[in-house]
Image 1 (spheres, rainbow, N blue to C red):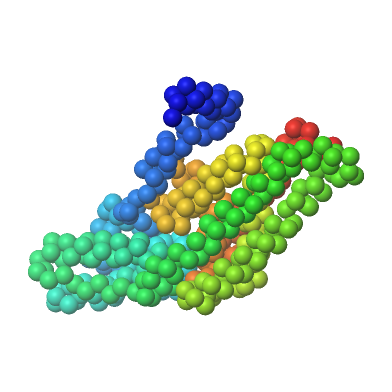
Image 2 (tube, rainbow, N blue to C red; image 1 turned 180 degrees about the vertical axis):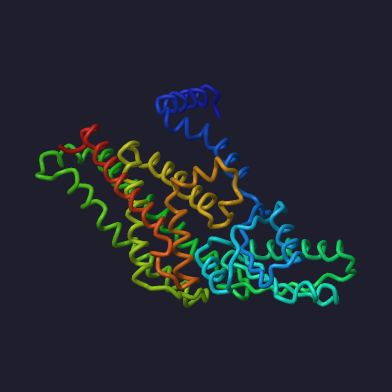
Length: 367
């Protein structure tokens, strides 16, 4: 090995790297971004979890237990309910993560050393449900001890929508969102960059195509492939992993198509701005996979993240699709129950479509 040859090759590669500031910036920013995302997004504890309370008898002892939950770091009372049905609806809609049912005879039973409360849990996120149950048990144990009872009263817990508390039941619908996000953005991020690298866009300028027609023609084949992937993933989730599809299939198809179009336009915009297949693929993976994995609520609850990071999640399309897919799969509800998520994806679709067309005109890709 001759040192001068190595030095010459290294000099050439360094100059090439300096001529590509976008790749250099990506390399330099990646460690910091990963540290920021993993450091702030990953939290395995629970704080300020919204809990609904059903006091069947508004006595002082029941009120004291409710106040104990509201004053804790783990919970905050997000609502008081008059009957079990409204509490169940709040759990289904995700307004509360748990429900505390205090029976009518609670005060007297506590005096007799035989008190019971019921804890209803949203079992879609099995890990969070287990943490909430542990926190609640510790709190009622301390409450009983302060009132002179050596033995804690009984906490009867029930996890709705996932009674077995199986993690895969809640994870698989989120995995579908991540797969669709990565595949949709990656496929389309390469297509326009490939045309730009090969010089085919120069010939396309002579064709009677508008920018909208060009973009639509590019996206349609990948959209059909993405929807086929959705069908395969949904079938595997139901038949292999045993995830129940309780909601309307048409609702799942509509919101999936909406989400797929959003991430495909995101990939097309990346492709137009980079003009390079390698860089486009790197940027698409970073802008889709990491946010979809860490900031969508797929693994880590968004409400447990710092406030600044919660605002950042508002621009992550996967955040809305994860919530919609879990509601459809596990809770059997129409996506219209979470109409704000559907509206957010629709706004993203229209905005990305407009920005992509404007950006392609500024770059002179098509007349």
